[in-house]
Length: 446
View 1 (tube, rainbow, N blue to C red):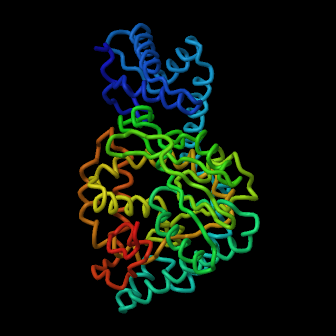
View 2: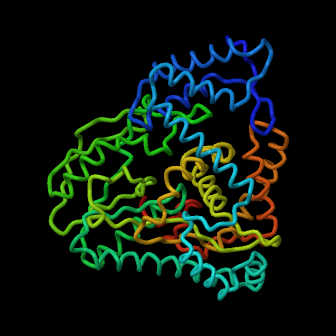
View 3: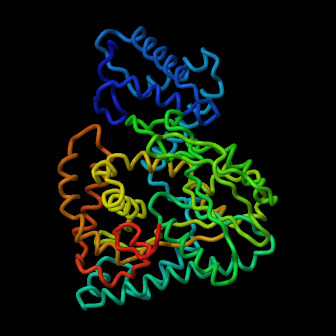
């Protein structure tokens, strides 16, 4: 057992020391550069712990910064320069992110689609849905079904526009990639896109990227010790690119099959070939990640990005955050369809968010078109469904140094939902709405 029992976080909080987190951090850095040797990662983590024990006076608590310094030192001394570089880059990126948030940087972010945001903002103003007060007023006037109709129509217009753009490039396209962060509505949008392409006489074949996951035992883990399916390195990017290249050249490939029950992948299972005038349709969290499809040229692929780009302000003039909308959606979906406690979703969300910021959001402006899946009326539904839960979580995580992020998010969402007029009658929501993907009752076959 280590002589170090606690560490000091950047906030000053003192928390238990968990050596396995060092191993997970080293293994994740190794996976990012192509390595998957867990035994080596465990050995290096033990070396880091031993160094910390030797360099610290008995009873002294090391800081997170000191632990990270030790990781860099051991990686370099043990001859793992590439892994050390990846670890250093990630550490620097997190440092800059924290600094920017602390300083409330005012310069426009390159990761925000400003033109699209302006369009949605203008739409919200014209429909008196720019503020929670405006939404509440319309709900109290009995207009909830009208709000649903207007919101759904805007989303459908976006899907129609994307379909038209694909049609205009059909002579050169081979692949359509639907991407976006967790719970942005990719699955529903992919199905709707399929329907519209079919109606236009276009042909397609779906491609399930989940079959390209590495075996579970080779996955990196997050800081909670859970297997991380959020990172692009959980996918066999080399095999994905090999198959993409062959498919776009008209060759047949054998798709692997990933069994989520066993956590094992079987190679060379299902034959797939693109016939002439057929498109490959891909729904993937990491579809915009450069290494995902680097084997084929941009001319052959149409990249579509989804995000609930809601433009709505609360009573304190703060915009409702997109990540909060997606968090609520994922809570509801995980609870209803995946037997996953929504409290766990909240506790782990900051890690999901960290992965998004690093592997998804930076590439938003490399896309061909952006669809907003945000529905102004959805906050009314969430106020009825989850207000009590967020009250419970906001109180539960207060003064818990290990759940600072969960507390912050819970209280922020609680403050927002308390301002919203709740709606319990969900009948006006169409059976094929993107929201049905999360709240249930969809007529679409997922």
